[in-house]
Length: 245
Image (cartoon, rainbow, N blue to C red; front, side):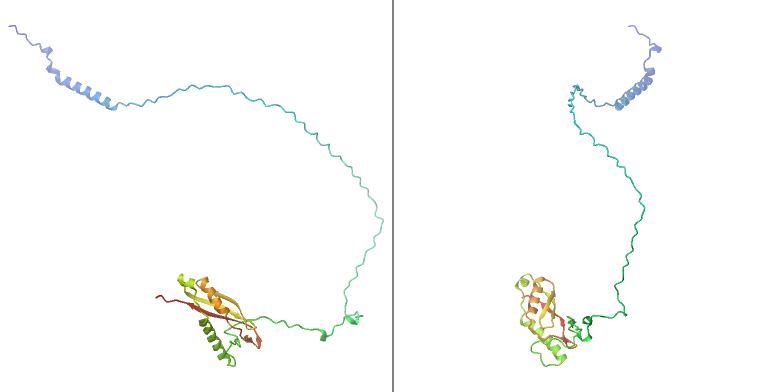
């Protein structure tokens, strides 16, 4: 058997670590390139064919317009000014005053008016006085022949009795649960008639009923201020209240 001697120059294992390092670097390089590799989406571009057609322009017919002839130029008038000497003398007009004075005598005695011929018309003023300051309050029927203070108390008492006697709670207000105080203002005029009734309350239904009650007041003797009949203003409250059962 023939044995061959190893050639030291041909020993492969001597540089194996170097080859391993080179291979490892190559693999790392290729791996890094693979990770850094980028791809882009390819878009499909449609290339159309553009067709150009010649556009025919419409011919506009030429129309001959018969314009009216221009107006004739204005005629220049030549003004001739002739200066004439003023030879006519103008007489001045004297305006006499029509006012009279004390020196002129009154020729017509029919126009003289005496003091006794002058009549003074007395105009009666419709004065309105509040009930609190009136000298003589209106006299309610049944309060005649009393003193001033008693007549005043009797008037207020009769008003209260009248309200209680003619009081009626509106059915609509009961159904809607409407209640409250209604202040009614009215005037007893110079003839003793109740006028000018106004009211203020929580609802129109109650105001209308309160005005109806005051409108039923009888005719009275009018109130007087300094002996003359005057209008007397008065206000009375009316309470609308119901009790729930």
